[in-house]
Length: 529
Image (cartoon, rainbow, N blue to C red; front, side, top):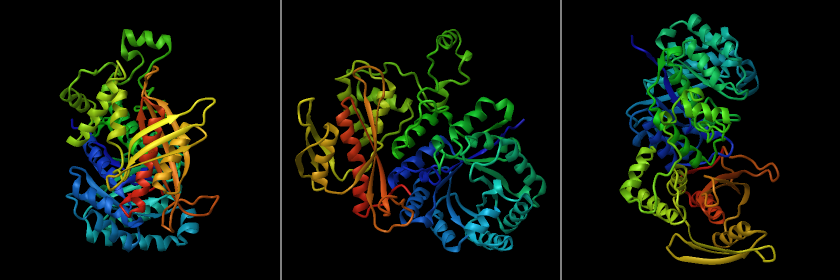
Protein backbone atom coordinates (compact mmCIF):
# COMPACT_ATOMS: atom_id res chain seq x y z
CA UNK A 1 0.00 0.00 0.00
CA UNK A 2 1.32 3.43 -0.98
CA UNK A 3 1.91 5.79 1.92
CA UNK A 4 0.49 9.28 1.38
CA UNK A 5 2.89 12.23 1.28
CA UNK A 6 2.75 15.37 3.37
CA UNK A 7 4.20 18.33 1.47
CA UNK A 8 6.64 20.50 3.42
CA UNK A 9 6.25 24.22 2.72
CA UNK A 10 9.21 26.09 4.21
CA UNK A 11 8.68 29.75 5.05
CA UNK A 12 11.99 30.40 6.82
CA UNK A 13 12.91 33.04 4.25
CA UNK A 14 9.57 34.85 4.62
CA UNK A 15 7.89 34.34 7.99
CA UNK A 16 11.13 33.19 9.61
CA UNK A 17 13.02 36.31 8.56
CA UNK A 18 10.35 38.40 10.26
CA UNK A 19 11.58 37.11 13.64
CA UNK A 20 12.66 40.12 15.72
CA UNK A 21 16.45 40.23 15.38
CA UNK A 22 16.76 37.95 12.34
CA UNK A 23 18.80 39.51 9.56
CA UNK A 24 19.53 38.14 6.09
CA UNK A 25 20.97 39.61 2.94
CA UNK A 26 20.29 38.30 -0.54
CA UNK A 27 23.35 36.05 -0.88
CA UNK A 28 22.51 34.43 2.46
CA UNK A 29 18.91 33.91 1.37
CA UNK A 30 20.08 32.19 -1.80
CA UNK A 31 22.46 29.92 0.12
CA UNK A 32 19.73 28.97 2.60
CA UNK A 33 17.34 28.28 -0.29
CA UNK A 34 19.92 25.97 -1.91
CA UNK A 35 20.30 24.13 1.41
CA UNK A 36 16.52 23.84 1.71
CA UNK A 37 16.55 22.23 -1.73
CA UNK A 38 19.14 19.70 -0.51
CA UNK A 39 16.93 19.12 2.53
CA UNK A 40 14.13 18.19 0.15
CA UNK A 41 11.43 20.71 0.99
CA UNK A 42 8.63 20.76 -1.57
CA UNK A 43 7.89 24.50 -1.56
CA UNK A 44 10.11 27.42 -0.55
CA UNK A 45 8.27 30.63 0.32
CA UNK A 46 11.17 32.85 -0.64
CA UNK A 47 9.77 36.18 0.51
CA UNK A 48 7.15 38.92 0.24
CA UNK A 49 8.20 40.65 -3.01
CA UNK A 50 5.95 43.70 -2.62
CA UNK A 51 7.47 44.56 0.77
CA UNK A 52 10.67 46.00 -0.70
CA UNK A 53 12.80 46.03 -3.88
CA UNK A 54 15.40 43.99 -1.98
CA UNK A 55 12.91 41.25 -1.15
CA UNK A 56 11.69 41.14 -4.77
CA UNK A 57 15.25 40.76 -6.03
CA UNK A 58 16.03 38.05 -3.47
CA UNK A 59 12.97 36.02 -4.50
CA UNK A 60 13.84 36.52 -8.18
CA UNK A 61 17.38 35.21 -7.66
CA UNK A 62 16.12 32.18 -5.76
CA UNK A 63 13.61 31.49 -8.54
CA UNK A 64 16.42 31.56 -11.10
CA UNK A 65 19.18 29.80 -9.17
CA UNK A 66 17.53 27.16 -6.96
CA UNK A 67 16.48 23.89 -8.54
CA UNK A 68 13.98 21.36 -7.24
CA UNK A 69 11.38 22.95 -4.97
CA UNK A 70 8.47 25.12 -6.06
CA UNK A 71 9.40 28.77 -5.43
CA UNK A 72 6.61 30.82 -3.87
CA UNK A 73 6.08 34.54 -3.35
CA UNK A 74 3.59 35.98 -0.86
CA UNK A 75 1.06 38.69 -1.78
CA UNK A 76 -1.88 40.40 -0.17
CA UNK A 77 -5.14 40.37 -2.13
CA UNK A 78 -3.92 43.51 -3.87
CA UNK A 79 -3.16 43.68 -7.58
CA UNK A 80 0.21 45.41 -7.16
CA UNK A 81 1.30 42.76 -4.62
CA UNK A 82 0.32 39.97 -7.00
CA UNK A 83 2.17 41.68 -9.87
CA UNK A 84 5.30 41.92 -7.71
CA UNK A 85 5.04 38.26 -6.68
CA UNK A 86 4.64 37.16 -10.29
CA UNK A 87 7.56 39.32 -11.40
CA UNK A 88 9.72 37.66 -8.74
CA UNK A 89 8.79 33.99 -9.37
CA UNK A 90 7.97 33.91 -13.08
CA UNK A 91 11.41 32.54 -14.05
CA UNK A 92 11.17 29.56 -11.68
CA UNK A 93 10.63 26.16 -13.34
CA UNK A 94 7.91 25.69 -10.71
CA UNK A 95 6.41 28.90 -9.35
CA UNK A 96 3.57 29.67 -6.96
CA UNK A 97 1.76 32.83 -5.91
CA UNK A 98 0.44 32.79 -2.35
CA UNK A 99 -2.35 35.33 -1.75
CA UNK A 100 -3.98 36.07 1.58
CA UNK A 101 -6.72 38.15 3.15
CA UNK A 102 -8.02 38.22 6.72
CA UNK A 103 -11.33 36.50 7.51
CA UNK A 104 -11.77 36.90 11.27
CA UNK A 105 -14.24 39.54 12.42
CA UNK A 106 -11.59 41.30 14.51
CA UNK A 107 -9.20 41.58 11.54
CA UNK A 108 -11.89 42.57 9.04
CA UNK A 109 -13.25 45.29 11.33
CA UNK A 110 -10.07 46.77 12.77
CA UNK A 111 -7.40 46.05 10.15
CA UNK A 112 -9.10 45.76 6.77
CA UNK A 113 -12.19 47.86 7.55
CA UNK A 114 -14.08 45.62 5.13
CA UNK A 115 -17.39 43.78 5.34
CA UNK A 116 -17.74 40.04 4.83
CA UNK A 117 -19.23 40.64 1.40
CA UNK A 118 -16.28 42.83 0.42
CA UNK A 119 -13.79 40.19 1.57
CA UNK A 120 -15.55 37.51 -0.48
CA UNK A 121 -15.58 39.70 -3.57
CA UNK A 122 -11.92 40.71 -3.12
CA UNK A 123 -10.98 37.05 -2.75
CA UNK A 124 -12.80 36.14 -5.96
CA UNK A 125 -11.25 39.01 -7.90
CA UNK A 126 -7.65 38.67 -6.71
CA UNK A 127 -7.41 34.85 -6.77
CA UNK A 128 -8.78 34.96 -10.33
CA UNK A 129 -6.22 37.60 -11.26
CA UNK A 130 -3.36 35.59 -9.72
CA UNK A 131 -4.54 32.47 -11.55
CA UNK A 132 -4.46 34.38 -14.85
CA UNK A 133 -0.72 34.78 -14.30
CA UNK A 134 0.27 31.49 -12.64
CA UNK A 135 -1.27 28.02 -12.53
CA UNK A 136 -0.18 27.23 -8.97
CA UNK A 137 -2.12 29.46 -6.56
CA UNK A 138 -2.26 29.16 -2.79
CA UNK A 139 -4.88 31.05 -0.80
CA UNK A 140 -4.79 31.83 2.94
CA UNK A 141 -7.65 33.21 5.03
CA UNK A 142 -5.56 35.04 7.63
CA UNK A 143 -6.57 34.38 11.26
CA UNK A 144 -8.65 31.38 10.18
CA UNK A 145 -8.36 29.97 13.71
CA UNK A 146 -10.53 32.82 15.02
CA UNK A 147 -12.83 33.08 12.00
CA UNK A 148 -16.51 32.13 11.89
CA UNK A 149 -16.39 28.62 10.35
CA UNK A 150 -19.49 29.16 8.18
CA UNK A 151 -18.04 32.36 6.71
CA UNK A 152 -14.69 30.64 6.30
CA UNK A 153 -16.32 27.88 4.24
CA UNK A 154 -17.82 30.51 1.92
CA UNK A 155 -14.49 32.27 1.37
CA UNK A 156 -12.64 29.01 0.71
CA UNK A 157 -15.30 27.86 -1.78
CA UNK A 158 -14.93 31.14 -3.67
CA UNK A 159 -11.12 30.78 -3.68
CA UNK A 160 -11.37 27.27 -5.17
CA UNK A 161 -13.86 28.45 -7.78
CA UNK A 162 -11.49 31.30 -8.68
CA UNK A 163 -8.57 28.91 -9.22
CA UNK A 164 -6.78 28.28 -5.91
CA UNK A 165 -5.08 24.87 -5.86
CA UNK A 166 -3.90 24.97 -2.23
CA UNK A 167 -5.93 26.25 0.72
CA UNK A 168 -3.77 27.20 3.67
CA UNK A 169 -5.45 27.44 7.08
CA UNK A 170 -3.42 29.67 9.40
CA UNK A 171 -3.63 29.77 13.16
CA UNK A 172 -2.14 33.24 12.80
CA UNK A 173 -1.95 34.13 16.49
CA UNK A 174 -1.39 30.63 17.92
CA UNK A 175 -4.76 30.68 19.66
CA UNK A 176 -6.33 27.29 18.97
CA UNK A 177 -5.93 24.01 20.82
CA UNK A 178 -5.06 20.83 18.86
CA UNK A 179 -8.58 19.38 19.11
CA UNK A 180 -10.08 22.67 17.96
CA UNK A 181 -7.70 22.98 15.04
CA UNK A 182 -8.31 19.39 13.95
CA UNK A 183 -12.08 20.05 14.09
CA UNK A 184 -11.58 23.14 11.93
CA UNK A 185 -9.74 21.10 9.27
CA UNK A 186 -12.39 18.36 9.37
CA UNK A 187 -15.12 20.98 9.03
CA UNK A 188 -13.43 22.40 5.94
CA UNK A 189 -13.14 18.94 4.37
CA UNK A 190 -16.82 18.25 5.03
CA UNK A 191 -18.39 21.62 4.22
CA UNK A 192 -16.42 23.40 1.47
CA UNK A 193 -17.74 22.70 -2.05
CA UNK A 194 -14.97 21.61 -4.42
CA UNK A 195 -12.51 20.90 -1.61
CA UNK A 196 -11.42 17.72 -3.44
CA UNK A 197 -9.80 20.00 -6.04
CA UNK A 198 -7.38 21.54 -3.55
CA UNK A 199 -4.72 20.53 -1.04
CA UNK A 200 -5.40 21.63 2.52
CA UNK A 201 -2.37 23.22 4.21
CA UNK A 202 -1.78 24.33 7.80
CA UNK A 203 0.28 27.25 9.11
CA UNK A 204 0.49 27.35 12.91
CA UNK A 205 2.15 29.85 15.23
CA UNK A 206 3.69 29.05 18.58
CA UNK A 207 2.31 31.71 20.92
CA UNK A 208 1.07 29.03 23.34
CA UNK A 209 3.78 26.51 22.45
CA UNK A 210 1.36 24.44 20.35
CA UNK A 211 2.48 25.11 16.77
CA UNK A 212 3.85 21.61 16.14
CA UNK A 213 0.99 19.91 18.00
CA UNK A 214 -1.61 21.90 16.04
CA UNK A 215 0.14 21.18 12.73
CA UNK A 216 0.18 17.45 13.40
CA UNK A 217 -3.45 17.57 14.54
CA UNK A 218 -4.27 19.22 11.23
CA UNK A 219 -2.42 16.48 9.35
CA UNK A 220 -4.37 13.78 11.20
CA UNK A 221 -7.56 15.60 10.23
CA UNK A 222 -6.65 15.53 6.54
CA UNK A 223 -4.22 18.36 5.79
CA UNK A 224 -1.51 17.33 3.34
CA UNK A 225 0.79 20.35 3.45
CA UNK A 226 2.49 21.82 6.51
CA UNK A 227 3.96 25.31 6.54
CA UNK A 228 6.92 25.54 8.90
CA UNK A 229 10.35 27.08 9.45
CA UNK A 230 13.82 25.88 10.37
CA UNK A 231 14.38 26.13 14.14
CA UNK A 232 10.78 27.36 14.52
CA UNK A 233 11.67 30.93 13.53
CA UNK A 234 8.85 33.38 12.87
CA UNK A 235 6.78 36.28 14.12
CA UNK A 236 6.57 36.62 17.92
CA UNK A 237 7.10 33.12 19.41
CA UNK A 238 7.67 31.61 15.96
CA UNK A 239 6.14 28.99 13.69
CA UNK A 240 5.90 25.22 13.74
CA UNK A 241 9.48 23.92 13.56
CA UNK A 242 10.17 21.94 10.40
CA UNK A 243 12.51 19.56 12.21
CA UNK A 244 9.85 18.74 14.82
CA UNK A 245 7.05 18.15 12.31
CA UNK A 246 9.21 16.06 9.99
CA UNK A 247 10.76 13.92 12.72
CA UNK A 248 7.39 13.34 14.40
CA UNK A 249 6.09 11.98 11.08
CA UNK A 250 9.31 9.96 10.65
CA UNK A 251 9.60 8.47 14.14
CA UNK A 252 5.84 7.81 14.44
CA UNK A 253 5.24 6.79 10.80
CA UNK A 254 3.23 3.73 11.85
CA UNK A 255 0.92 6.05 13.79
CA UNK A 256 0.50 8.64 11.04
CA UNK A 257 0.94 6.30 8.05
CA UNK A 258 2.37 9.30 6.21
CA UNK A 259 5.76 10.32 4.88
CA UNK A 260 7.59 13.36 3.48
CA UNK A 261 10.23 14.02 0.83
CA UNK A 262 12.71 15.35 3.42
CA UNK A 263 16.28 14.02 3.59
CA UNK A 264 16.47 13.97 7.39
CA UNK A 265 20.28 13.81 7.40
CA UNK A 266 20.26 17.43 6.17
CA UNK A 267 18.20 18.72 9.10
CA UNK A 268 21.05 19.56 11.47
CA UNK A 269 23.33 21.23 8.87
CA UNK A 270 20.35 23.33 7.75
CA UNK A 271 19.60 24.29 11.34
CA UNK A 272 23.17 25.42 11.88
CA UNK A 273 23.23 27.44 8.67
CA UNK A 274 20.00 29.26 9.51
CA UNK A 275 21.08 29.91 13.11
CA UNK A 276 24.37 31.41 12.02
CA UNK A 277 23.05 33.45 9.10
CA UNK A 278 20.17 34.94 11.12
CA UNK A 279 22.09 35.33 14.37
CA UNK A 280 19.22 33.54 16.15
CA UNK A 281 20.86 30.94 18.40
CA UNK A 282 19.15 27.60 19.00
CA UNK A 283 18.32 26.97 22.65
CA UNK A 284 20.23 24.04 24.15
CA UNK A 285 17.10 22.02 24.97
CA UNK A 286 15.44 22.58 21.59
CA UNK A 287 13.93 19.35 20.22
CA UNK A 288 15.90 17.58 17.46
CA UNK A 289 18.57 20.26 16.85
CA UNK A 290 19.42 21.62 20.32
CA UNK A 291 22.83 20.93 21.84
CA UNK A 292 21.25 18.73 24.53
CA UNK A 293 18.82 16.87 22.25
CA UNK A 294 21.02 13.74 22.28
CA UNK A 295 22.96 14.44 25.49
CA UNK A 296 22.53 12.40 28.69
CA UNK A 297 23.80 13.47 32.10
CA UNK A 298 21.68 11.61 34.65
CA UNK A 299 23.33 8.40 35.82
CA UNK A 300 20.24 6.27 35.23
CA UNK A 301 19.97 7.59 31.67
CA UNK A 302 23.66 7.06 30.97
CA UNK A 303 23.45 3.49 32.23
CA UNK A 304 20.45 2.80 30.02
CA UNK A 305 22.06 4.35 26.94
CA UNK A 306 25.23 2.30 27.40
CA UNK A 307 23.16 -0.88 27.55
CA UNK A 308 20.78 -0.01 24.73
CA UNK A 309 20.32 3.43 23.14
CA UNK A 310 16.61 2.77 22.66
CA UNK A 311 16.11 3.04 26.42
CA UNK A 312 16.29 6.84 26.29
CA UNK A 313 16.60 7.77 22.60
CA UNK A 314 13.69 7.45 20.18
CA UNK A 315 15.82 8.37 17.16
CA UNK A 316 19.42 8.09 16.04
CA UNK A 317 21.37 11.35 16.04
CA UNK A 318 22.82 10.42 12.65
CA UNK A 319 19.29 10.31 11.21
CA UNK A 320 19.10 14.10 11.51
CA UNK A 321 22.68 14.65 10.36
CA UNK A 322 24.35 14.78 13.75
CA UNK A 323 27.45 12.77 14.51
CA UNK A 324 29.29 12.06 17.71
CA UNK A 325 31.37 14.99 18.99
CA UNK A 326 34.59 13.00 19.22
CA UNK A 327 38.13 13.38 17.86
CA UNK A 328 37.65 13.57 14.12
CA UNK A 329 40.75 15.27 12.73
CA UNK A 330 44.13 16.47 13.94
CA UNK A 331 47.03 18.72 13.03
CA UNK A 332 48.41 16.18 10.55
CA UNK A 333 45.13 15.74 8.68
CA UNK A 334 45.15 16.80 5.05
CA UNK A 335 42.83 18.91 2.96
CA UNK A 336 41.16 15.91 1.35
CA UNK A 337 40.31 14.35 4.71
CA UNK A 338 38.97 17.70 5.92
CA UNK A 339 36.80 18.08 2.81
CA UNK A 340 35.50 14.54 3.20
CA UNK A 341 34.58 15.19 6.83
CA UNK A 342 32.72 18.37 5.88
CA UNK A 343 30.73 16.41 3.28
CA UNK A 344 29.85 13.79 5.92
CA UNK A 345 28.61 16.63 8.15
CA UNK A 346 26.38 17.93 5.37
CA UNK A 347 28.39 21.02 4.37
CA UNK A 348 28.82 21.76 0.67
CA UNK A 349 31.54 24.37 0.19
CA UNK A 350 32.97 25.81 -3.00
CA UNK A 351 36.74 25.85 -3.56
CA UNK A 352 37.33 29.27 -2.03
CA UNK A 353 35.19 28.53 1.03
CA UNK A 354 36.95 25.20 1.54
CA UNK A 355 40.36 26.85 1.35
CA UNK A 356 39.42 29.44 3.98
CA UNK A 357 37.87 26.84 6.29
CA UNK A 358 40.88 24.52 5.94
CA UNK A 359 43.29 27.34 6.77
CA UNK A 360 41.31 28.07 9.92
CA UNK A 361 41.22 24.36 10.76
CA UNK A 362 45.03 24.08 10.54
CA UNK A 363 45.37 27.20 12.67
CA UNK A 364 43.08 25.67 15.30
CA UNK A 365 44.83 22.30 15.09
CA UNK A 366 48.04 23.95 16.26
CA UNK A 367 46.25 25.14 19.40
CA UNK A 368 44.03 22.15 20.24
CA UNK A 369 44.93 18.47 20.44
CA UNK A 370 41.31 17.36 20.11
CA UNK A 371 39.14 18.88 17.40
CA UNK A 372 35.48 17.92 17.52
CA UNK A 373 32.70 18.24 15.01
CA UNK A 374 31.39 21.18 17.00
CA UNK A 375 34.76 22.91 16.53
CA UNK A 376 34.50 22.31 12.78
CA UNK A 377 30.94 23.66 12.78
CA UNK A 378 32.21 26.82 14.47
CA UNK A 379 34.93 27.21 11.83
CA UNK A 380 32.46 26.81 8.98
CA UNK A 381 30.05 29.24 10.63
CA UNK A 382 32.78 31.83 11.06
CA UNK A 383 34.39 31.48 7.63
CA UNK A 384 31.49 30.62 5.35
CA UNK A 385 28.29 31.96 6.89
CA UNK A 386 29.46 35.56 6.73
CA UNK A 387 28.55 38.60 4.62
CA UNK A 388 30.70 39.91 1.78
CA UNK A 389 33.51 41.88 3.40
CA UNK A 390 33.78 45.62 2.84
CA UNK A 391 36.40 45.80 5.59
CA UNK A 392 38.28 42.76 6.88
CA UNK A 393 39.95 42.32 10.28
CA UNK A 394 43.65 41.75 9.58
CA UNK A 395 45.14 42.09 13.04
CA UNK A 396 43.97 42.66 16.61
CA UNK A 397 46.02 43.22 19.75
CA UNK A 398 44.89 44.19 23.26
CA UNK A 399 46.52 45.20 26.51
CA UNK A 400 44.53 45.00 29.74
CA UNK A 401 44.66 44.02 33.40
CA UNK A 402 43.31 44.98 36.81
CA UNK A 403 45.70 47.96 37.04
CA UNK A 404 45.98 48.74 33.31
CA UNK A 405 43.93 50.85 30.94
CA UNK A 406 42.33 48.45 28.40
CA UNK A 407 43.83 49.36 25.03
CA UNK A 408 43.27 47.80 21.62
CA UNK A 409 45.10 48.16 18.33
CA UNK A 410 43.35 46.94 15.19
CA UNK A 411 44.36 46.70 11.54
CA UNK A 412 41.57 46.63 8.95
CA UNK A 413 41.90 46.12 5.21
CA UNK A 414 39.61 48.53 3.40
CA UNK A 415 37.72 48.15 0.11
CA UNK A 416 40.68 49.61 -1.78
CA UNK A 417 43.05 47.02 -0.30
CA UNK A 418 44.78 49.54 1.97
CA UNK A 419 45.47 48.45 5.57
CA UNK A 420 44.45 51.03 8.16
CA UNK A 421 45.69 50.85 11.75
CA UNK A 422 44.21 52.62 14.76
CA UNK A 423 43.96 52.22 18.53
CA UNK A 424 41.54 53.13 21.31
CA UNK A 425 40.95 52.83 25.06
CA UNK A 426 37.83 51.27 26.54
CA UNK A 427 36.18 50.03 29.71
CA UNK A 428 37.44 46.54 28.82
CA UNK A 429 39.29 44.79 25.98
CA UNK A 430 36.19 44.18 23.84
CA UNK A 431 34.97 47.76 24.30
CA UNK A 432 38.43 49.00 23.30
CA UNK A 433 38.43 46.81 20.18
CA UNK A 434 35.00 48.08 19.11
CA UNK A 435 36.00 51.70 19.67
CA UNK A 436 39.18 51.23 17.61
CA UNK A 437 37.17 49.65 14.77
CA UNK A 438 34.67 52.52 14.94
CA UNK A 439 37.48 55.07 14.64
CA UNK A 440 38.44 53.51 11.30
CA UNK A 441 35.04 52.76 9.81
CA UNK A 442 33.17 55.77 11.19
CA UNK A 443 29.60 54.48 10.80
CA UNK A 444 27.46 55.35 13.86
CA UNK A 445 25.77 52.37 15.48
CA UNK A 446 24.72 51.06 18.87
CA UNK A 447 25.54 47.64 20.30
CA UNK A 448 22.25 46.21 21.59
CA UNK A 449 23.14 42.60 22.32
CA UNK A 450 26.33 40.66 23.12
CA UNK A 451 26.43 36.90 23.76
CA UNK A 452 29.39 34.58 24.23
CA UNK A 453 29.45 30.81 24.70
CA UNK A 454 31.97 27.97 24.60
CA UNK A 455 31.55 25.52 21.74
CA UNK A 456 33.17 22.60 23.59
CA UNK A 457 34.50 21.85 27.06
CA UNK A 458 38.00 22.61 28.27
CA UNK A 459 40.28 25.59 28.66
CA UNK A 460 41.18 25.47 24.95
CA UNK A 461 37.54 25.56 23.81
CA UNK A 462 36.49 27.58 20.80
CA UNK A 463 34.30 30.49 21.83
CA UNK A 464 31.41 31.79 19.74
CA UNK A 465 30.27 35.40 19.99
CA UNK A 466 26.95 36.66 18.64
CA UNK A 467 26.15 40.36 18.65
CA UNK A 468 23.42 42.67 17.39
CA UNK A 469 23.87 46.30 16.38
CA UNK A 470 21.37 49.04 15.57
CA UNK A 471 21.86 52.03 13.24
CA UNK A 472 19.48 54.83 12.35
CA UNK A 473 17.96 54.56 8.89
CA UNK A 474 16.19 56.83 6.49
CA UNK A 475 12.42 56.52 6.34
CA UNK A 476 12.45 53.01 4.88
CA UNK A 477 9.31 50.88 5.00
CA UNK A 478 9.17 47.70 7.11
CA UNK A 479 11.93 48.69 9.54
CA UNK A 480 11.49 48.70 13.33
CA UNK A 481 11.33 51.96 15.29
CA UNK A 482 13.60 52.74 18.22
CA UNK A 483 11.10 53.57 21.03
CA UNK A 484 13.57 56.01 22.63
CA UNK A 485 14.27 58.13 19.55
CA UNK A 486 11.16 57.41 17.49
CA UNK A 487 13.39 56.86 14.45
CA UNK A 488 13.51 53.84 12.16
CA UNK A 489 16.58 51.66 12.56
CA UNK A 490 18.47 48.92 10.80
CA UNK A 491 19.24 45.90 12.99
CA UNK A 492 22.05 43.52 12.04
CA UNK A 493 23.54 40.49 13.74
CA UNK A 494 27.15 39.32 13.64
CA UNK A 495 28.87 36.04 14.45
CA UNK A 496 32.50 35.23 15.24
CA UNK A 497 34.45 32.24 16.57
CA UNK A 498 37.96 31.78 17.93
CA UNK A 499 39.84 30.22 20.83
CA UNK A 500 40.45 33.86 21.81
CA UNK A 501 37.19 35.47 22.94
CA UNK A 502 38.44 38.99 22.17
CA UNK A 503 39.28 37.95 18.61
CA UNK A 504 35.89 36.25 18.29
CA UNK A 505 34.27 39.47 19.51
CA UNK A 506 36.13 41.49 16.90
CA UNK A 507 35.10 39.10 14.13
CA UNK A 508 31.46 39.22 15.24
CA UNK A 509 31.49 43.03 15.20
CA UNK A 510 33.03 43.11 11.73
CA UNK A 511 30.40 40.63 10.51
CA UNK A 512 27.57 42.93 11.65
CA UNK A 513 29.31 46.09 10.43
CA UNK A 514 29.87 44.64 6.95
CA UNK A 515 26.11 44.05 6.63
CA UNK A 516 25.48 47.63 7.70
CA UNK A 517 28.13 48.96 5.29
CA UNK A 518 26.56 47.00 2.44
CA UNK A 519 23.25 48.79 3.08
CA UNK A 520 24.97 52.17 3.27
CA UNK A 521 26.60 51.43 -0.09
CA UNK A 522 23.24 50.58 -1.64
CA UNK A 523 23.82 46.84 -1.90
CA UNK A 524 20.96 44.39 -1.62
CA UNK A 525 20.87 43.53 2.07
CA UNK A 526 17.77 42.70 4.10
CA UNK A 527 17.78 44.07 7.63
CA UNK A 528 15.44 42.98 10.38
CA UNK A 529 11.91 44.21 9.76
